[in-house]
Length: 174
Image 1: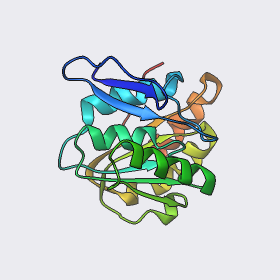
Image 2: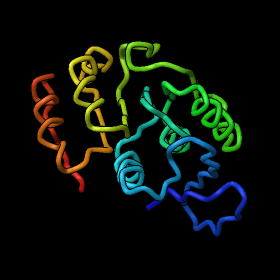
Image 3: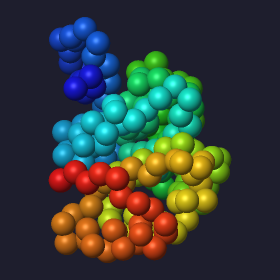
């Protein structure tokens, strides 16, 4: 409820307490209108704390990293396999006064830390299932993994991969 996504070329009517993210998706995924992005924003709004160290895996436009930063996370990294997406994310971070977000090209194995309190991945189900075994090694004790972008026909595959990796599913949103 606090997060308002506004195209970079528009002016937003901001209500008290709202956090505005100005966004130009360019050629990258992540405009804020896709259901999975909206659900992630809603979950992040509840989870993010000042002491958090967050990795936005598959950052696309940088929207989720920017939301985390604006919600007050202590440290945010944004990584994507697509260099063009990283360029877009860097521009969006600058345009939102979030220049402290560390944007770089890579994948989970290239993440700079191994003690994230939160990893968010709004990507495709097959990739989530494939990386599930490697995510716990990147999380601090008690860390959380928010994953999204899972179509109904792939839900069982992802849930099985998460369970095999030792995760307990705390919430499901559809």
